[in-house]
Amino acid sequence: MAPITQELALSDYQKGVAAYWRVHTTDPVNEELGKVDGLYHHHYGIGTPDPAVSRAPWAIRNQEIINELHRLETAQADLLLDQFGPIKPEDRLFDGGCGRGGTSIMAHARFGCHVDGMTISEVQADFANQQAVERGIDSHVRFHLHDMLHTGIDDGSISAVWTNETTMYVDVFDLYREFARILRPGGRYVNITGCYNDVLGDKSAAVRTIDSHYLCNVHARSTYFKALAANGLVPVKVVDLTPLTIPYWELRMQSSVRSGIEQPFLSAYRDGSFQYLMIVAERV
Image (cartoon, rainbow, N blue to C red; front, side, top):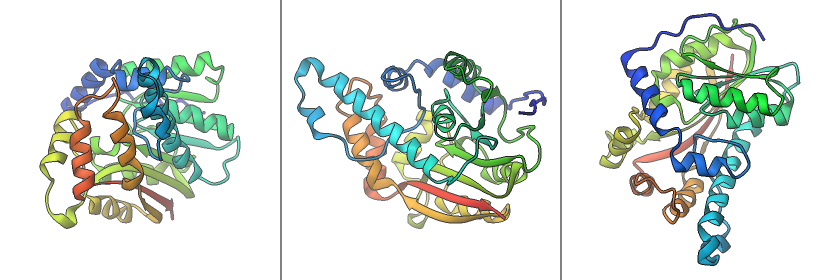
């Protein structure tokens, strides 16, 4: 993998986001779930929870719920990786806003390929690189303290790119311009994200609460498709994952790792003002 040599220069907003994750890296919702099998995710889950976990004896119920939440988060990452099709060991993938590296590690385990992850959080980058070293995959999987709007990666050198709940921290027109540059023709981009449903108008109160909680700016659904079209990225699949993620949030409400943001997510999903989308696009 070619080195990424550009110097990291963050805006004041990016510095604030990095500081947020410096403080919240050990949040129970990330930390306790990651301890289940050593895969640390910074995204949410999809699927039907096992109803038995909510009926487990009180002494073990919370851990059973945590195990199940982690299974659903891993299922979400598996669904994302399913969208790439055949990936060869010599291919290079890019994880934009990689968090602590869980999906990148899963991608290498599945495909045996090279993966570059990128985050503006030094805590996340250091943690993820240590995970790669401990797993003996650091020759193929590397995490960079860097801005994904200016990756420093060679033109057309990436076979597949993904963003997993990270696009709400950037201008997607700028982001997709960079992704179109680094993707090879025919390469795939997969995005799983929460977005507000602008068919209904502006952001609901619940979506504004989500923005405030995470220091982010949730985009309108239409913004994604405008930004893709402007940069030669053609959608080939769009899936509304909202019905599949609501059970995850309902289960999280029962756990010790609930953070207080669960109800705004559930309210916004249920009233239709917020949607959980998977968008798969190809570089023309």
